[in-house]
Amino acid sequence: MLAIYKKELRSYFTTMIGFIYAAIFLVIVGIYFMAYNLNGQYAKFEYTVSAIEFLYIVLIPILTMRLVAEENKQKTDQLLLTSPISITKMVLGKYFAAVTMYLAPVVIMCFYPLIIAKYASVSFGPYYATAYSCIFGFIMLAAAYIALGLFISAITENQVIALIITAIAVFISYIMPGIESMLPTDNQSSWLILSLLVVVICLILYLSIHNITMTMIIGVVAEVALMFVYLLKPSFYDGLVTKVLDVFSISEKFSNFSAGILDINAIIYFLSVAVMFILITIQVIKKRRWS
Image (cartoon, rainbow, N blue to C red; front, side, top):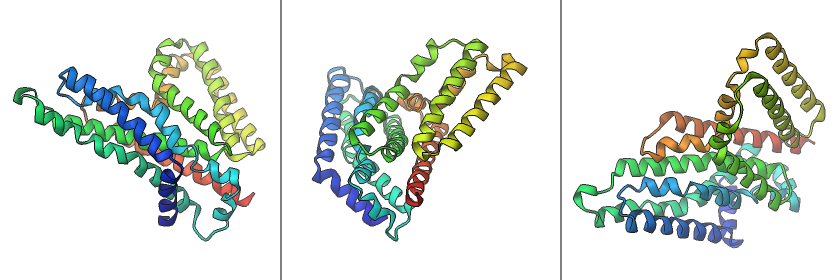
């Protein structure tokens, strides 16, 4: 795993991706820090951190687009698949390399609350606990998104496609609260929306396992189950779409951190999402090994 980790981390700087990522991150953070904390004279750094959450729509795809897609395109994945190293160690090596690259500019960002403390008045000094808990939440959110991007990179051979799909996925998660507020909550609409969601999930499943029979069976069973529940108890679907979509709203779980609250439930959620996508990625690559 260490060899894969070093190789992937080194590649960020031999392909300029690492420099582009770090430059975008630090420039945007610096602009918002100046606007909110220096010019705006706000002593709470969490305002700045919550304001730059949109950066993930651009930065996460940049970090993850080539992790597996490049190996697939250049067919160097065959070397990895036939090597003695386990698929789990290979995936974890790539994942932790991306997380390490992500953390590099975040370390610099951690000095900003100290700068505020130096120049702020005593009565309006920064609250270190809230500032750093927000930064920690920012890191945990990225850990979940990086795992998502790793999975998307594993199901395509084109880096550009991986970048676009990851950006769309992160963007949808970012605007999910707004989407939820616009959707109808009556039982019939909820049933139709959930049926459509099953189709989307089955499409993603097919791209992951490339098994049309398994995908069709899962899709049909899920659709029949939805219809059966609707015919038996329609009221069960009242407001159900909002609850289901809330599970997919990764970004919304960051809201408590934005307020300076260390949300343990959100931390568990972010870790669960990261572990889930890492495990799915491992299974996708394992299937490629035996196919």
